[in-house]
Amino acid sequence: MGRSPCCDKIGLKKGPWTPEEDQKLLAYIEEHGHGSWRALPSKAGLQRCGKSCRLRWTNYLRPDIKRGKFSLQEEQTIIQLHALLGNRWSAIATHLPKRTDNEIKNYWNTHLKKRLAKMGIDPVTHKPKNDAILTSNDGESKNAANLSHMAQWESARLEAEARLVRQSKLRAGSSNSIQAQNSEFASTSSQLQKPVVPARCLDVLKAWNGGVWSAGGGGGGGELGSPTSTLSSAAGVGESSAALLEFVGNSFGSCEDSGMMKEESEEEWKRAAEYRSEEIRDPIPFMPGLQETSSFPSEWASESMRGNSEHVPSGNFVEKFTDLLLSTSSGDRPFSEDGGESDNGSGSGGGGGSGDYYEDNKNYWNSILNLVNSSPSHSPIF
DNA sequence: AAGACAGGCAACCGCGCAATG
DNA sequence: GCATTGCGCGGTTGCCTGTCT
Image 1 (cartoon, rainbow, N blue to C red):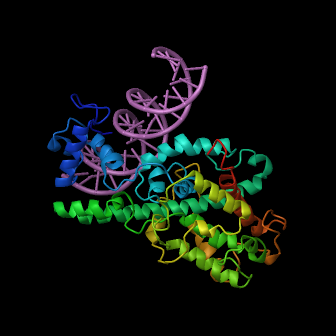
Image 2 (cartoon, rainbow, N blue to C red):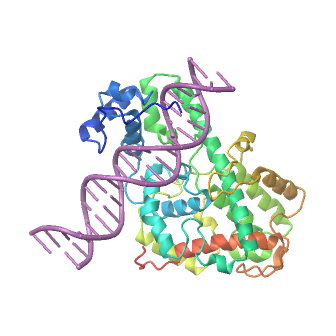
Image 3 (cartoon, protein in one colour):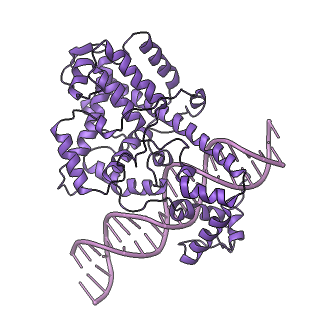
């Protein structure tokens, strides 16, 4: 509908960019910024469509792009976020400073997807391929439902962040100052694609670890052994709910700050495998600590609760999340019914109930991390 | 050495959404 | 409210390069 042609105009060049074209584009953007991609090519003297220019800029020429191999933690971030968000590469990219969605997408398709497949993990569902046999329909649906809740929440948050970026860009864009634009590229250009808020990583999983995994009481939580997860059944209420509340708006140091960009990779996988193989005692070290708390902007929930991914089945997450918070604050334990009597975290020994519900999910994520991290470092996969 | 094959990645394409007139 | 425009996203393609035979 009403869509004007873009790259099919006669006379527009397609295909690989030449250094001369790159130079023209760079020079123009450095001098003028990119106000309108559509108008840019002619102004810059390029026989390209605006879309092609934008792509070239965002995926290749932008000064804040990190190229080269992905670090172990970047890989883990991608895998885990993909488990939550599905093929929402732009959302995943917001958690990986200096990486473009296209790069992440390519890396997933060419490396990580195959790696997971070889490890027996379905790269779409992030579950072991024989999981369907091992898991009852009921348990699976619980896993899916809970994951979907988290994913929807993350989706909403990311989109809200994106809105903030757009708004801030609009504000910034109201000034035609070249310096302003240039300084923006230089200092915060990654924020052109990312939220204004500090880069985050693994919010959901962090909350998952802090709020859900640790909530198994003295049993499962104790098994995990996190300093933050030594919850008595009484204190656990407050702490786990606090973790969830922190998760609502948490903002912690960027992945980069937390050592995200360590050079990779074999050694890191090896170290991680060693570490993880000792004991899955505390997922938290993979996730920077919870630090900041902010309020829950209602607008986050106002849109984008649409189920836009097969990973994110539709459902009224906000409602349930609110219920969760309410029940938490009212003293009910949302995560565990069985207090400290669960087994060593490996199974759903106790009967039924929400204890099993979250235990299943904990085990699910444990299995992902286990499978990823415990793969032999000498494996051809790696 | 050369052809075949596979993997990796840059770029293209089409769609959806938001903004605007 | 509708048409149009512009941008961003995700899927896909095709070229380039490295490896194998």
